[in-house]
Length: 323
Image 1: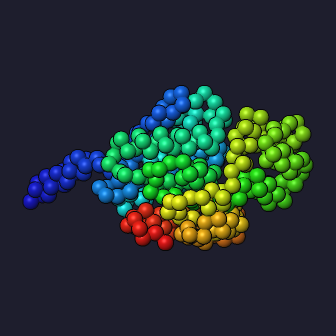
Image 2 (image 1 turned 90 degrees about the vertical axis):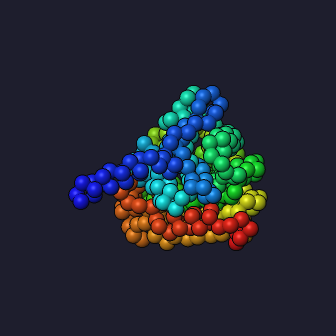
Image 3 (image 1 turned 30 degrees about the vertical axis):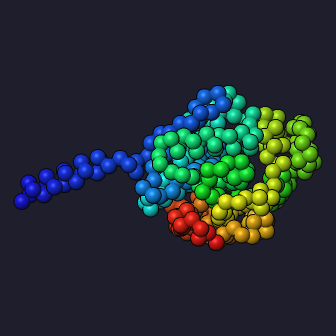
């Protein structure tokens, strides 16, 4: 009897190894100068695929960033969706990480360029798996890319915005910088600098505090000018595809005014507020900024279950039943 039990366990082990359909696999897509790189989790038959578009700066396919963000929100969300049979495609932006070969200068980019990359990713995914359309999930700045893509691409199932700006990024950036009283000594000239970028003009960083030099570095000003020219609420209003807006009540970077702007722009959209969720999809205590910030470096914390539920329910809903 013990021998039979051992053989049964071994057979079960090999049976599991022989079922790779849900395993993660590398996927590439054509970029402007070289390959874009990402990670694909194949959906179960008749289940959807969600393309996760990263947030600002050097954010990788897992949602991590060299600036002390190691919470892995995209990877953890993908893992949770995989448990429901939902596939995901997580990507590195052109010129960064696995997509470094796609362009020599990752800062020489526009939102339109990211939309072109999104189209390339969709074509690569559709060549790999049998799907009619792809859902776009944009996080933070990635939400602007997702909304812009919705104006250009035809093969989308719909759009999901998670902790997304609802106002132009110049407004959001100005508010973020002034929100912390400790920043006051650094902010001389910052409002004028943002106003110049909003007007489409580059600024001289010598007029700013040295600690802000990286934020307004000449190498990124072209992208900042392009980014600030996009109004997320207007893009949401022009989006015909099913639209889900998910806002976190404990988000330190994106406030209630942004959620309100998106809802005003697209009143038809489905809206979910997750009171305890922060900007990196984690549940944290209210009025606890240190715990909130600490979660940015904690990949052991799961993403908010309500986020998984909201995304899964929205993308699994039969077409024609969108609210």
